[in-house]
Structures are given as C-alpha cells and as structure tokens.
Image (cartoon, rainbow, N blue to C red; front, side, top):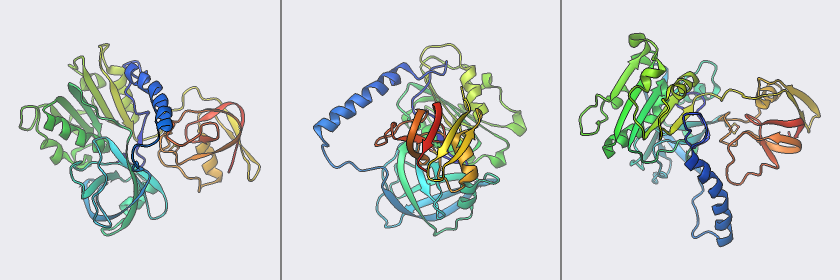
Length: 364
Ligand code: FES
C-alpha cells in the first residue's frame, strides 16, 4: 500500500458518485456481523491461517524504477512459498527499527516465491527513509497480506494512478488485461523520470491483445496537470473506477464522475483523510495524568505524538489497528474501520477517532 511513505486505504467498500458507501456493500456490511456470529456458534470448520502471522523475509533484490523510488523483492527466509494474494493487497512491513508501514504488493500474484513492494522516499519520512537505507540481504518481518482495496470482477474498469499510486493498480491492470476485460488506465505523475514501472505498464496487453491505446501515460511536465473531467471522459455505466494517488486526484475523480448508474468507486490514499466535522476535545493520558487539548483540525494521534514520540502508528487512516489504545472512560466517536478481535467499547483508534462529547481517558 504504500508505495509512498504511508500507504493507506479508505474503508474497503466502493462509493457511489455521491461518496456514500455503495448500497450492495452497505448490505454486505450488515450481513457480515450476523454471519460472524453464526460462524462463532458453529465453530471453525478447519484451522484458519491468521493473516497476522509474522513472515520472515529477506530482501533479495533492490531496484530503482524511478527517481526516489526503491522496489524491493522479498523472499521467504526459509524458502517456503509465500501466502497467496490478490491485486490490491498490501502487507504490513516491520522495519528493523520496529516501525510498521503498509505497502502494496506490486509483483505477480502467481509467484509464490517472492513479493515486490515499491516505496517512494518522502523527505522527513521515517518509514520510507528506513526502507531506502536497506541493503540487499536485509531481513524484515511481514504481516498479511491483507486486502483493503478489493478488486472484484466488473464488466469494465477505469484505473487512475498518480505516481507511486501505480503500485496497487499495476497488478489490477495486468489482471484486467489477462481477463480480456475492457479497461482504460490513466497514469499521471510529475515527469516520466518520477513514474515507476512505465515499461511494465506499457507491456500490459489491452483487451484483444497488444499494447493498448487504452493506456495513457500523462506526465505533468508534458501534458500539464490533468483535468479531472478528462480522466473520466467517456466513462460508461457499469464501469468500476479505481483511483490511487494523492488526495486531490482522488477528490477530483470523485467529483467529476457523471451522474450515471453503476459507477462504483474504489480508492486508496497516500495520506490521512481530511478531518470532517471535527470539534476540539481533551484526552487524558491516564498513566501520567497529563491532559492534552486536541484542536478541531488535528487528530489525537498528532497531539499525543508531540509529547510521546514513541506512540505507535502506521496507516493513520483507521484501518490497521496499530494506534489503538484502551479507552478507560469517555464517549468515543469511532471513525476507524473495525477489524476482527477488537472491541470498540474498550479501544479507540486515536489516528482518526474523536470524542463523542467530553474528555477521553486513555490507558497510556
Ligand atoms: S494508525 Fe492505523 S488505525 Fe490508527
């Protein structure tokens, strides 16, 4: 997932053109808890393979597919086959310092011998800086893969990738090409030199075979920044729209989608979502008694990390669970994406969640 410093995803269901969760997925969301309860009553049919298991891997190769981008090939330390994955999956990478970052898998899902991730170096970014300092032979720990950017079968696709955002999109485009699906890819970036995997993108066959006219490479220094309307021009009903890139690209595509039926929108961000409907509140760090004020335009994590720089976090978008702490008292406005095993009554994801009124007392 992150191909950039921090790789993030929004809630993993598509949105309609007004930004609301797609009705099908809303229904699914309601069904899943009931099915989970039923499953718990019945008991497991077989031992599930937990995605949180630690996978020891070795960096077998480092490439530089673009300016400021390192592509790491990772192989299982014991040579055993790696877990399967689908386009859109990411892994949690535990770096030697203990930092955890998410990066999209951008290699071949059919290759169980190796994974590939690509990371753009972000000035001042601790995670990306550490990745860029790794050497071939380095040992890392992975968790996952997980899928927060699902890629179900649709009749046709529009893919829009911005810079390092090509990483989750590339396996999707390859799969669409292999399946003979009707698709269009628009790949944008500052310049060709900054855009990784241009050669691999150009080699993707379009429906019917051969390099596709449906693949558009649009560096800003040649064409100017793309207008969002151009990115979605000619889109037909029944097209699944996938966007990965900086927030303005995602917002632009979202706002430019025409009012047509059946345009599910999936996106993945590089940075935390903007705070909406934020109000100031207080958090109390119970172990020290320190009380901090969280302004309306900042997150609790931002404020706490200033006085506790060691506070763990990763996605900063409420889906990985790294920043969750025990909530001792107070009413939370939970804005994270719940994952299995967590209790919303007892824990709070401080990267996105806020107070539902009054002070929050945290076990930290
Ligand atoms: S940092 Fe991932 S949920 Fe908060």
